[in-house]
Amino acid sequence: MYPSLFISHGAANIILGNSFSKKNIKKFAKTLEKPKYIIIFSAHYITNDLKILDYEKPELLYDFYGFEKELYEYEYEINSDKFCSLKVLKHLESNNLNASIHKGKNNFDHGVWTTLSMMYENLDIPVVQISLPRSFSDEHFLPLFIAFGSALNKKGTSFNKEMVYSNISMECFAFDIKD
Image (cartoon, rainbow, N blue to C red; front, side, top):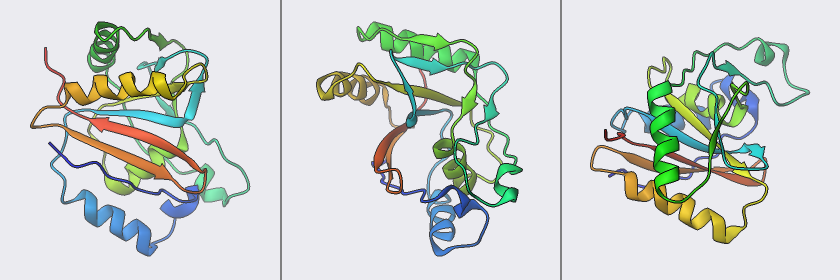
């Protein structure tokens, strides 16, 4: 099992330059075994109830302002996966957590794509993004994260990403989903 990691993505424009932080994130990512799936709980994706981002036609969400023009033109291929999304949904439900696919909401937020673009130049790993529900208290999050901790196996990984500039945190899990 992979260790838990805390990675600050900093400001969104970190991806444009060749900063020390960007170099270290890239270097560190090369030490990790490639996961089959990446499951991300994003603090930039907040909903009333627990939702999984729609896997149909994923796009980038440029959810920031005041940055360089080239950041708004930045392209990064990131894909989801129907099978993986539905397996995650089934896993949540089997752990008594009510969730649903957020039909029509298919935008990966900047906390997801900026960090992944630094870690994986060409991302060929399906990504499933899960919301943080407004209705959840600390007591609700523990069973949610335990549910994913129980799904990790020896080929999986679990990592946390602390978003310092947003002063919020994001949980990321990547693991093999068993049939």
